[in-house]
Length: 251
Length: 299
Image (cartoon, each protein chain N blue to C red):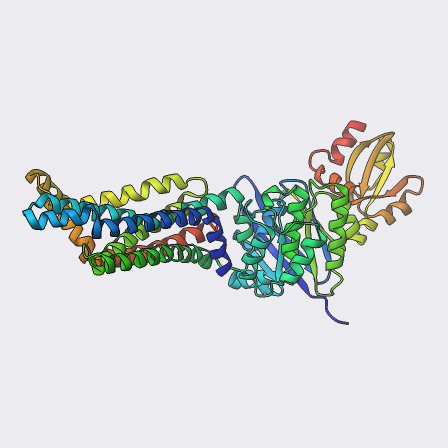
């Protein structure tokens, strides 16, 4: 099985190279952010806020923090798209090889999930290091809040990947784009359906309370998303195994 | 006397696809032999191989590899099997080194020294992407993989098709070396009967999903004969001896299933040894151009 994980990582080689570039980019941005937060515009905005009690200056600092968080999540997003493995396997006709290996169908499916965890592990690890350094050097956001954001982002990406894998197994080779489209759509529909009344109230009232609540949820209740991600992953694995066994490993 | 073990055993195996049916297929492959699995395209060779490897499930019947039923633990059994398909299946960006990394983490008995020795012997570059390999090189790469985990059974599906005669001979030489070990067995599916005639000890002939002939190659070749006669002489030949009749250069050619009996019964007629290709062709065309039709034409 380990060999199949290595093969999947080889398939994602290009993505890993892009990941490297993105990490470098995020590191540069982080350094710039730290410098700005200490000596530049963000620091000045903070000083202005303190001096004039002008709330708009505080918004600037918040805004820049949010932008940085978005940039920080880029490494995760880069490694999160797993459908490329299916595309590469389909192009090569790898089924001819995998079906003759001394690896059961269950383990062949499991190898895909292990690869996802390996990729997310790399992405999350890098993000945590950046978050740790940033929280040490600036006092705009705490490490705990950063950790919450990273956990939430990893969980959302894990849910997305879990759905993508199931759909890739279900649709078969060459239909990865459908899996890529249907998965986020399904996630969005579920999220909207579960919060429909809150969204309606917020739109009717015309306030940004919902966004603030969302941000708070992401920062402080990320464990809920993590639990959902674990549950979806487990269900996705068993469904994928069932589909793969029905198709005798041909996806 | 020591009993000959069967490495592959198929008993009444049936697989129905609706438009194609593998019907009650039964044969065995003795340990240490080279078994040629012949039949025209679409006869059911690849389906049978896929059933053996548990890639697809049989509707009925039993398949045993190394004396064990495949249903229980087919993945473990595949540890001792090397497989070569007519299409490569490795990713085009992969190099010999990448394949080695992957395989040594899959096969317990993977021997990277053997693998790199084969790559060297086949003049396959280890750092070149296999997408840039020619068909012959791709086939050699597959064979190198199949032989590098100390497999006891080599199953090959049309490994020599589309290759030039020099590469084909090279392959056949490698297969010969493989079966020098007493417990090594080869099941070689092909429609190129010339290769099998050089290499095979046993022959299994499949046509339209049914096993037509199975047994020792020399026995099959010895039993069958190609009788050449005039159309008018055809009715003299005993019908149970005739497999099929085909028009020849100066009359008709008849494939007979008991050459010695024919030689005794019809000493005036010319009976030549039949090749595997002759046997295959006559059996394949048996339903469409049978003796009944030919005798009717003669009348």
